[in-house]
Length: 318
Image (cartoon, helix red, strand yellow):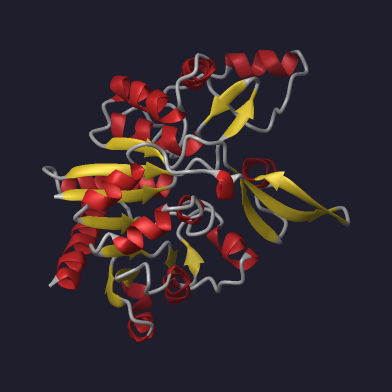
């Protein structure tokens, strides 16, 4: 079975770990979000790609869900001593090595897709990890700070501001001019099923879908497309999907997110058991829906979620 997964960071990475356990013989291609990418200290940082790579490769900090395990921060402390910023983004010493290698390879002329493949040679994540695009795309968030409307990088909104102010708009800068990375459209054309994990529907999966050609390729693939709700009981499981959804005028509700994706893209949708009342609403929108436990409390629970998604895909196919 050939499975394509559109993934953001922590939620997508943890779901992928469960998917690998649920379908150990599957050929899994991951299209990773690069809208969170940022340049810091002269280095190209790809948070979502790295989170998937570290999580599946056994190097992730399990407690926080991002960054390296057994991390130290001596370089960060030295940069701060020199007065070099920003000091709000905490890169660890082990993590710095990844960004140095990536930046050197990009500087030598290799595209991000080739660099990502090279980095994965070390980590052996057990999936084919593709960036959504080799082009520069950065998600920016419009906010009101001290009475002045301004746009900030998503990382600044999430890490420095901690989503403490309302997001007025979300813009994937550069997306309209980008094109899918090599292998992305081919993977979608050859897929047996496409999955949307419980990643942020606006700044993770939404940004991937903003790359011209990807949404169209999914819709035209003719295979089941099944998503898992990141909203449980009217709130995001983690992160700030509610702030992002509000910025684009979508209610923070499992059914509303399904309708945001739309029946032209989505064939099946899993909601948490707590949102079983939303099943009829989603199905009325033309999307097959089932209520199952959706909390990724451990590997077994996550694998069960993945099996439910694949089962719904087969139901749709039949």
